[in-house]
Length: 430
Image 1 (cartoon, rainbow, N blue to C red):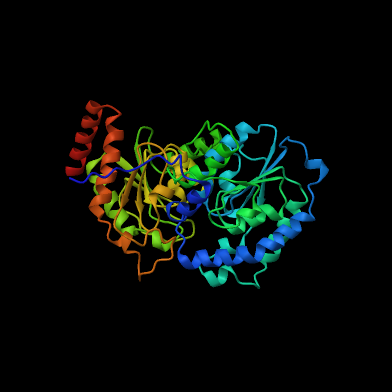
Image 2: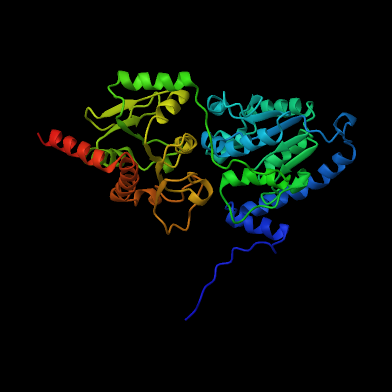
């Protein structure tokens, strides 16, 4: 008999070995991309070395005190939610510092009023706006000039500490360009010489949220919170309850939220599939369905008095979502928002890797079709359609939702639940 032992001991792995292993463990870099990165590094390295020789550290920044911190994360809603444990711990560890977040305008409503950062600077980074590689690097885009002006203004502010967890040569370059005193990031994606602190990646914990946490661990800071958190005001919660009451939702109704959308088409399992799952749940459980629709988009929804279609701005969506018991969705930004609002999720995954971007916290269910060698493709599907999603059976998602819903409803009290379900069944059969 052959015995296979999986090793979890990474203590003897060098920093260089960890960086190389990260290209397959934490990201997916093919040979062509690695060659391009090496070429850019070879061209930029002597220029950077020369400029650093003639760029002395200003005397005003020689103190060890950390007064101004810059955090760079300019991508999408879910990325900010996964970053939130880092921001929570950063605030705890540097209570007197001014924390500045460089981010996309579309995530500002999400991060506003969270008391995690002191200042939000909006920026539209050219390569984060489109899926098309040609449009990403269009040299005539006015976004390049805007980005340069933004970085130049940040350089004048003399940040003491700057972070990026993207392991992206472009992000590392930005940290170097703004000339922060300490620049903390990862080298395995290229541009390690732009950093002052090259963090050794944690191969045992590949989740994107942990990549942020790892930056603070590198600085010797204890981690006190690892779960994403989002804060809602009392006014927002009260407004959500009033909205639901106006739509016929009574106090005590158990709400199941469904959101069939996602930022990318390659992550959308299909509205018709979600409708069938919702209808089957309504037949078995005493629930009401909150059916979320994207603002300004026409979408299908299940019929019936127990279904409440809603199309809401981001903050109102979050408030209503927080009133729900379960959230059924695609791999998406709203999925991560639910985890940060303590709402268990049933998430359908296609082209992305749950180990990297899955929902954090207990009581979550992930439905995924294993065996696709091309995962993760980062929404650049090599087929005519995302078969990793198309081959997911409706019954698989229903069973995952049934499991999650049964556990939560039973927590209310088995005797009470049985009585309620019998009454609902009698009403529906009348």
